[in-house]
Image (tube, rainbow, N blue to C red; front, side):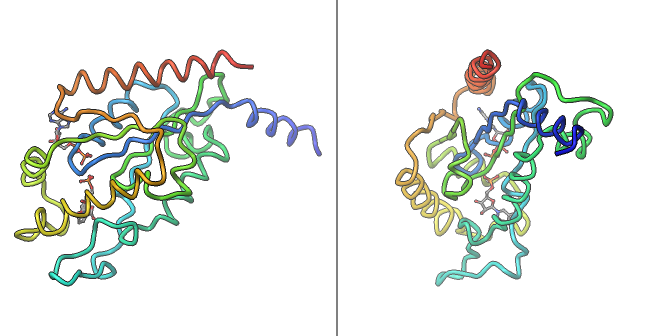
Length: 215
Ligand SMILES: Nc1ncnc2c1ncn2[C@@H]1O[C@H](COP(=O)(O)OP(=O)(O)O)[C@@H](O)[C@H]1O
Ligand SMILES: O=C(O)c1ccc[n+]([C@@H]2O[C@H](COP(=O)([O-])O)[C@@H](O)[C@H]2O)c1
Protein backbone atom coordinates (compact mmCIF):
# COMPACT_ATOMS: atom_id res chain seq x y z
CA UNK A 1 0.00 0.00 0.00
CA UNK A 2 1.35 3.48 -0.88
CA UNK A 3 2.08 5.85 2.01
CA UNK A 4 -0.57 8.39 0.87
CA UNK A 5 -3.21 5.64 0.68
CA UNK A 6 -2.13 4.46 4.12
CA UNK A 7 -2.55 8.02 5.44
CA UNK A 8 -6.08 8.26 4.00
CA UNK A 9 -7.04 4.86 5.48
CA UNK A 10 -5.64 5.86 8.84
CA UNK A 11 -7.59 9.14 8.85
CA UNK A 12 -10.80 7.33 7.95
CA UNK A 13 -10.32 4.79 10.71
CA UNK A 14 -9.73 7.62 13.22
CA UNK A 15 -13.09 9.25 12.45
CA UNK A 16 -15.61 8.66 15.19
CA UNK A 17 -19.22 8.43 14.12
CA UNK A 18 -22.69 8.45 15.63
CA UNK A 19 -25.86 7.54 13.74
CA UNK A 20 -29.02 9.04 15.23
CA UNK A 21 -32.51 8.02 14.13
CA UNK A 22 -35.38 10.49 14.49
CA UNK A 23 -38.52 8.52 13.75
CA UNK A 24 -42.14 8.89 14.68
CA UNK A 25 -45.67 9.56 13.70
CA UNK A 26 -46.56 11.85 10.81
CA UNK A 27 -46.41 15.49 12.00
CA UNK A 28 -44.93 14.40 15.33
CA UNK A 29 -42.10 16.95 15.01
CA UNK A 30 -39.37 14.82 13.36
CA UNK A 31 -38.05 17.38 10.90
CA UNK A 32 -38.25 20.16 13.52
CA UNK A 33 -36.09 18.05 15.85
CA UNK A 34 -33.69 16.91 13.11
CA UNK A 35 -33.09 20.46 11.86
CA UNK A 36 -32.50 21.73 15.37
CA UNK A 37 -29.94 18.97 16.08
CA UNK A 38 -28.18 19.66 12.79
CA UNK A 39 -27.92 23.37 13.62
CA UNK A 40 -26.50 22.67 17.05
CA UNK A 41 -24.13 19.78 16.27
CA UNK A 42 -20.84 20.41 14.52
CA UNK A 43 -19.98 17.89 11.75
CA UNK A 44 -23.58 16.74 11.45
CA UNK A 45 -25.91 16.26 8.50
CA UNK A 46 -29.46 15.06 7.83
CA UNK A 47 -30.74 12.35 5.52
CA UNK A 48 -34.54 12.66 5.33
CA UNK A 49 -36.67 9.69 4.32
CA UNK A 50 -39.39 11.80 2.74
CA UNK A 51 -36.92 12.86 0.01
CA UNK A 52 -37.17 9.27 -1.27
CA UNK A 53 -40.89 8.94 -2.03
CA UNK A 54 -41.52 7.30 -5.39
CA UNK A 55 -43.25 9.20 -8.14
CA UNK A 56 -47.04 9.28 -7.67
CA UNK A 57 -47.55 7.12 -10.80
CA UNK A 58 -45.62 4.28 -9.11
CA UNK A 59 -47.69 4.30 -5.92
CA UNK A 60 -50.69 1.91 -6.12
CA UNK A 61 -54.12 2.46 -4.55
CA UNK A 62 -55.70 0.21 -1.94
CA UNK A 63 -59.17 -1.33 -2.20
CA UNK A 64 -60.72 1.88 -0.83
CA UNK A 65 -59.07 3.93 -3.56
CA UNK A 66 -56.45 5.49 -1.24
CA UNK A 67 -52.88 5.89 -2.54
CA UNK A 68 -50.60 3.64 -0.48
CA UNK A 69 -47.98 6.17 0.55
CA UNK A 70 -47.46 4.93 4.11
CA UNK A 71 -45.46 1.79 3.35
CA UNK A 72 -41.80 1.07 2.61
CA UNK A 73 -42.87 0.11 -0.93
CA UNK A 74 -43.69 3.77 -1.61
CA UNK A 75 -40.08 4.74 -0.92
CA UNK A 76 -36.81 4.32 -2.81
CA UNK A 77 -35.10 2.77 0.20
CA UNK A 78 -32.30 1.48 -2.04
CA UNK A 79 -31.39 5.06 -3.01
CA UNK A 80 -31.64 6.23 0.58
CA UNK A 81 -29.25 3.46 1.68
CA UNK A 82 -26.74 4.50 -0.98
CA UNK A 83 -26.61 7.94 0.70
CA UNK A 84 -26.29 6.43 4.16
CA UNK A 85 -23.48 4.09 3.06
CA UNK A 86 -21.75 6.96 1.30
CA UNK A 87 -21.70 8.90 4.59
CA UNK A 88 -20.45 5.85 6.49
CA UNK A 89 -17.60 5.26 4.04
CA UNK A 90 -16.22 8.77 4.49
CA UNK A 91 -18.29 11.28 6.51
CA UNK A 92 -15.77 14.05 6.03
CA UNK A 93 -15.90 13.91 2.21
CA UNK A 94 -19.69 13.53 2.40
CA UNK A 95 -19.99 16.84 4.28
CA UNK A 96 -17.51 18.56 1.96
CA UNK A 97 -19.37 17.44 -1.18
CA UNK A 98 -22.57 18.92 0.22
CA UNK A 99 -20.95 22.22 1.21
CA UNK A 100 -21.51 21.56 4.92
CA UNK A 101 -17.84 22.09 5.79
CA UNK A 102 -15.15 24.05 3.94
CA UNK A 103 -13.68 22.26 0.94
CA UNK A 104 -10.12 22.70 2.27
CA UNK A 105 -10.87 21.46 5.81
CA UNK A 106 -9.06 18.39 7.10
CA UNK A 107 -10.43 15.54 9.21
CA UNK A 108 -10.84 16.68 12.80
CA UNK A 109 -11.21 14.83 16.09
CA UNK A 110 -14.86 15.69 16.57
CA UNK A 111 -17.46 12.99 16.18
CA UNK A 112 -19.32 12.95 12.85
CA UNK A 113 -23.06 12.72 13.45
CA UNK A 114 -25.56 11.45 10.89
CA UNK A 115 -29.19 12.32 11.65
CA UNK A 116 -31.62 10.08 9.77
CA UNK A 117 -35.17 11.37 9.91
CA UNK A 118 -38.39 9.74 8.78
CA UNK A 119 -41.66 8.00 9.62
CA UNK A 120 -40.52 4.47 8.65
CA UNK A 121 -36.80 4.49 9.42
CA UNK A 122 -37.01 1.84 12.15
CA UNK A 123 -39.18 -0.45 10.00
CA UNK A 124 -36.43 -0.98 7.44
CA UNK A 125 -34.06 -3.55 8.92
CA UNK A 126 -30.87 -2.69 6.97
CA UNK A 127 -31.21 0.91 8.15
CA UNK A 128 -32.50 0.14 11.63
CA UNK A 129 -29.44 -1.92 12.48
CA UNK A 130 -27.12 1.05 11.84
CA UNK A 131 -28.53 3.31 14.56
CA UNK A 132 -26.58 4.12 17.71
CA UNK A 133 -29.54 6.12 19.08
CA UNK A 134 -33.23 5.82 18.24
CA UNK A 135 -35.85 8.47 19.09
CA UNK A 136 -39.54 8.14 18.31
CA UNK A 137 -41.89 11.13 18.49
CA UNK A 138 -45.50 10.31 19.31
CA UNK A 139 -48.64 12.42 19.57
CA UNK A 140 -52.25 11.30 20.08
CA UNK A 141 -54.81 10.80 17.32
CA UNK A 142 -56.59 14.17 17.68
CA UNK A 143 -53.40 16.25 17.69
CA UNK A 144 -52.01 14.29 14.76
CA UNK A 145 -55.19 14.72 12.71
CA UNK A 146 -55.21 18.46 13.44
CA UNK A 147 -51.54 19.01 12.55
CA UNK A 148 -51.87 16.89 9.42
CA UNK A 149 -54.93 18.83 8.23
CA UNK A 150 -52.90 22.03 8.02
CA UNK A 151 -50.07 20.46 6.00
CA UNK A 152 -50.23 20.20 2.22
CA UNK A 153 -48.49 17.17 0.73
CA UNK A 154 -47.88 16.58 -2.94
CA UNK A 155 -50.34 15.14 -3.86
CA UNK A 156 -52.61 16.63 -1.15
CA UNK A 157 -54.47 14.24 1.17
CA UNK A 158 -57.89 13.42 -0.36
CA UNK A 159 -61.01 13.60 1.89
CA UNK A 160 -61.09 10.80 4.47
CA UNK A 161 -57.40 9.89 3.94
CA UNK A 162 -56.36 10.36 7.57
CA UNK A 163 -59.03 8.14 9.11
CA UNK A 164 -59.30 5.72 6.19
CA UNK A 165 -55.59 5.19 5.57
CA UNK A 166 -52.95 7.24 7.48
CA UNK A 167 -54.02 6.41 11.05
CA UNK A 168 -54.62 2.65 10.51
CA UNK A 169 -51.25 2.44 8.72
CA UNK A 170 -49.56 4.27 11.61
CA UNK A 171 -50.88 1.69 14.06
CA UNK A 172 -49.80 -1.16 11.81
CA UNK A 173 -46.32 0.26 11.08
CA UNK A 174 -45.75 0.97 14.74
CA UNK A 175 -46.64 -2.60 15.69
CA UNK A 176 -44.23 -3.90 13.07
CA UNK A 177 -41.48 -1.55 14.28
CA UNK A 178 -41.91 -2.72 17.86
CA UNK A 179 -41.53 -6.31 16.71
CA UNK A 180 -38.11 -5.67 15.21
CA UNK A 181 -36.59 -3.16 17.62
CA UNK A 182 -36.76 -2.42 21.31
CA UNK A 183 -34.03 0.15 21.97
CA UNK A 184 -36.18 3.20 21.33
CA UNK A 185 -36.50 6.40 23.36
CA UNK A 186 -40.12 7.57 23.08
CA UNK A 187 -40.72 11.33 23.09
CA UNK A 188 -43.94 13.18 23.79
CA UNK A 189 -44.39 15.45 20.75
CA UNK A 190 -47.03 17.49 22.62
CA UNK A 191 -44.43 18.86 25.02
CA UNK A 192 -43.07 22.32 24.22
CA UNK A 193 -40.56 22.20 21.37
CA UNK A 194 -37.72 23.61 23.49
CA UNK A 195 -38.17 20.81 26.02
CA UNK A 196 -38.21 17.99 23.46
CA UNK A 197 -35.24 19.41 21.56
CA UNK A 198 -33.26 20.06 24.74
CA UNK A 199 -33.67 16.53 26.13
CA UNK A 200 -32.51 14.90 22.89
CA UNK A 201 -29.65 17.33 22.39
CA UNK A 202 -28.31 16.62 25.89
CA UNK A 203 -28.58 12.87 25.36
CA UNK A 204 -26.67 13.04 22.07
CA UNK A 205 -24.00 15.28 23.61
CA UNK A 206 -23.45 12.67 26.31
CA UNK A 207 -23.12 9.88 23.73
CA UNK A 208 -20.75 12.04 21.69
CA UNK A 209 -18.62 12.88 24.72
CA UNK A 210 -18.37 9.21 25.63
CA UNK A 211 -17.18 8.41 22.11
CA UNK A 212 -14.75 11.30 22.10
CA UNK A 213 -13.24 10.05 25.34
CA UNK A 214 -12.49 6.64 23.79
CA UNK A 215 -9.19 6.00 22.05
N1 LIG B 1 -43.33 20.09 20.23
C1 LIG B 1 -44.18 20.68 19.38
N2 LIG B 1 -45.24 21.36 19.83
C2 LIG B 1 -46.12 21.95 18.98
N3 LIG B 1 -45.99 21.91 17.63
C3 LIG B 1 -44.94 21.24 17.11
C4 LIG B 1 -43.99 20.59 17.94
N4 LIG B 1 -43.06 20.01 17.14
C5 LIG B 1 -43.43 20.28 15.87
N5 LIG B 1 -44.56 21.02 15.84
C6 LIG B 1 -45.29 21.51 14.66
O1 LIG B 1 -45.94 20.39 14.07
C7 LIG B 1 -45.92 20.48 12.66
C8 LIG B 1 -45.24 19.24 12.09
O2 LIG B 1 -43.87 19.26 12.50
P1 LIG B 1 -42.74 18.54 11.65
O3 LIG B 1 -41.46 18.70 12.36
O4 LIG B 1 -42.80 18.98 10.22
O5 LIG B 1 -43.29 17.04 11.76
P2 LIG B 1 -42.85 15.71 10.99
O6 LIG B 1 -41.51 15.96 10.35
O7 LIG B 1 -42.79 14.67 12.06
O8 LIG B 1 -43.93 15.40 10.00
C9 LIG B 1 -45.17 21.79 12.34
O9 LIG B 1 -46.15 22.79 12.16
C10 LIG B 1 -44.35 22.06 13.58
O10 LIG B 1 -44.09 23.43 13.78
O1 LIG C 1 -43.61 13.69 0.25
C1 LIG C 1 -44.36 13.09 -0.55
O2 LIG C 1 -44.09 12.91 -1.74
C2 LIG C 1 -45.68 12.55 0.01
C3 LIG C 1 -46.72 12.32 -0.84
C4 LIG C 1 -47.91 11.85 -0.33
C5 LIG C 1 -48.03 11.58 1.03
N1 LIG C 1 -46.97 11.79 1.84
C6 LIG C 1 -47.14 11.52 3.29
O3 LIG C 1 -45.95 11.79 4.00
C7 LIG C 1 -46.12 11.19 5.27
C8 LIG C 1 -44.76 10.99 5.90
O4 LIG C 1 -44.10 12.23 6.06
P1 LIG C 1 -44.20 13.03 7.44
O5 LIG C 1 -43.21 14.14 7.23
O6 LIG C 1 -45.62 13.51 7.57
O7 LIG C 1 -43.82 12.07 8.51
C9 LIG C 1 -46.87 9.91 5.05
O8 LIG C 1 -47.90 9.79 6.01
C10 LIG C 1 -47.43 10.08 3.61
O9 LIG C 1 -48.84 9.85 3.55
C11 LIG C 1 -45.82 12.29 1.36
